[in-house]
Image (tube, rainbow, N blue to C red):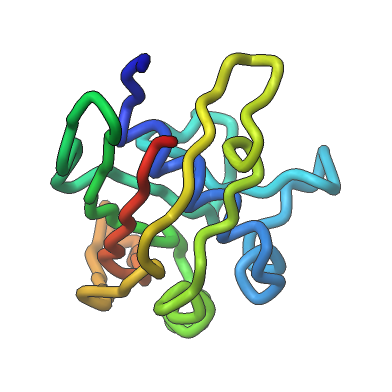
Amino acid sequence: MSSFSPQVVGAEVLRDTMVSISDITTLVPLAAAPAQFKIFYEHVPDWVEMPYFIIQHIAGGHEQSTPDAEAMDSYFKIVIQTTEMLTAVTAITALSQLNRLDPVMTSYETGNPDSNPIIRSYATIRETLPIYERYVVQNVPYFRGGGIYRIRLIKE
């Protein structure tokens, strides 16, 4: 049984789940590519304008590894970065739809030609802490809205 990275798989599954929620995607469309959205894992390219979502691994990883099963239990911080207070508040409401939602497993349901393993969820996504932050850089206010989310997956 080959290993998998809980951070990478968890972030991809959360992104796929976020893209399935229209209230989220309407906040961050990518103008140059209509079917793509400004949702990034850890790093945002310099050319991307606000608002955009950032997914960041906070804690957790392999929960149980045996010869028969490999599971993960991880926490991710998901926030929108924006200069508009209303957009941050709207993002908190949109992201709250992730709570108690079954993860979307687009890349991992049946495996794929890129050798992705088959991975399933064994619990719904849970919001553990909502987040609202305001800070100022060179007299310009910035806002972050979102939350900390727990995701639990198992590799078959």
